[in-house]
Image (cartoon, rainbow, N blue to C red; front, side, top):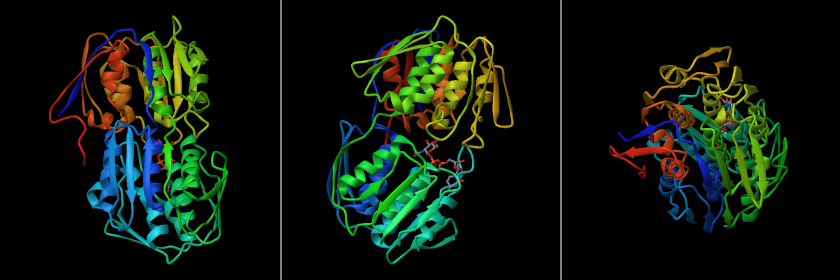
Length: 423
Ligand code: UD1
């Protein structure tokens, strides 16, 4: 098993280029199934989840090649039954359901399980497809859906689920008539998917707002496209700089996508400058405590919650962070307690005592963003930490240790059977 060894207490500073967004790239790959022809997608992060999605697409009949963050896809004829193990290994692969159902009239996928951050039901995805006329059967861990041609429908989501909004939007693109999605998720990645699909010939408007309208078309072509910057990767490195009392400049960044995080940075006492397309964050001499709740976009992202909890351990006083999106997203806290953090969790809220000196420890990663948080904790700790389970980190961060080393961190990867591999 690969692991990171981190020697803490180094101040981070310097310039970093942010990758394209994982949570957009994966969905653009799924959306390509709706079209036909040759696609070139730029700024695709070279991370394990993207390699897994390449595997899923290939199994469906797509040619997929990723080199130098440039993804080439050739979409011709498809089949609708992706291998069970690939779909189960990555939840985002459920996003192929909408496109395949719309394009082929049927799809069969393995039902993904829950995961380390909580129950992750699919009821909103499936009831959306049903409203569009699909017949769905779930047996023995398999979801089978079919529909001769999906019909446009007026769908109100009980909760603005990112995945359900995207899956229904993609299915609706080839449906007969108009689909309206109300209480849609408003994440920037959804706007990116709308722009990509419209470039392929779809007729979608309203993404980024709570009401999305999709006028169905009969077929779609291909498109060349550039993925938006990854706001979660950017946020992770901003918080890493703050916890080390450093200074970081990021390029390839859209500050408006980071609004809720930048508000918290200001509350913490940090200063922010945006000049010539680059964003610089300066740390204060002392971090101030805060009260934050995660929320759907434009609220504070749940995917930065664990990293912010770590920052709170070094702030002056008591901070509170409420998790409102996932029901089990504090599972990493015992790892922080091993290092000396003082945190109580009650009713989905973490109460974090600041001024807690952290000590290096042997840490085990349980999920992607918790992994990033443990790296931040190790950067802030006195002494050496060994972090195992870093394959979770490789799912979503491209060469994290190299990027942090460029900023002055002392972090090394020791390879078990390691690095990125195609699944
Ligand atoms: C996506 C992101 C993930 C991020 C999350 C919230 C990708 C690949 N992943 O996940 O990084 O943390 O958005 O910003 O883009 N829910 C239901 N029924 C459903 C679907 C969801 O009850 O059918 C609930 C979930 O259990 C959860 C909440 O809605 O409590 C949010 O989930 P959702 O927005 O769907 O997240 P994902 O799309 O899975």
